[in-house]
Length: 382
Image (cartoon, rainbow, N blue to C red):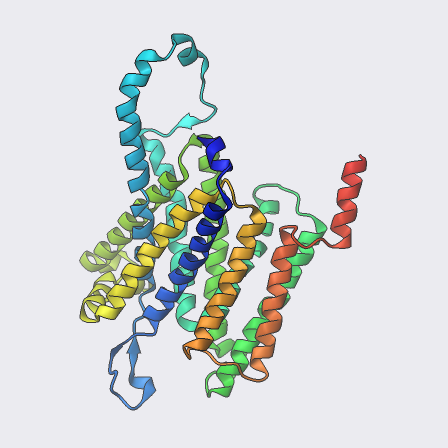
């Protein structure tokens, strides 16, 4: 089976790659479109009176439901495997059964709850990122998410005790400068529209801070998830699905506790966990509900496509796909009128995007600096 997958046709690879690009873009697009839906005082001539759909926790629940749906595939595989096992076990030599020892542990019983730890971090991270999406334009939101390499590098050194090359630290420095350019461009545009008077009061900057906090939690979540997966024999879709189930259960528990015993839940968490009002808004506004369903479906299919193409897709292709997604989302935002190119704000934004692209490509070794090339030559000579 693995050999057949590795020799998949180029048509299959391009189809799956295109699917990841389209579905990855549609996830962010649907959620941002949800945030732009007016739910109260929509006929008011004063824009300040209008209230929009702002339910970051409910959008996190959408994500977890999409992940939980991924369990359908492993369930079908397990059922088929169990059916075939009855006949295959009878014909299998006893010697092969004794000598074949699994390299990883089987996930059984309470061990499954280890996946609840990354699920908790994923819940917090996704909620922070969704809050950031409310305050930032779609393009800046997607660009800021490119800063994940910053936290990956920091955790690689502090937690994983891995060596980060000098050219990668240079990439991290470029990421920081690029984020400053993107944030400053967003502030200039907001200020020109009569918004924030200082950087500290800028909604765009505040939104970027939430996204960066979410990315920090995401990197920690990825490290913990990697440690669990490295110890246990687990299918990737099973990991995604089980974490989705834990995330759904935890969010619903917090929402229920906030309603039944509000004194036990801190006020900020209680405000975020008000899923009831979000569901009511969805029911009252069908477009919000449809966009939520599309976002959930996109997440499910994106995870499935991502796992299906893992054996064929290089790290370079994944990085280029993420870059293409950022450009596509910005183009869509400009085309539909959500954003506009302005002087000089958009110049800073373009420079920031170019810096982020160059930094990410350099960090992953797609672009080679002279120092990284010389380092590789030294390693070969040794």
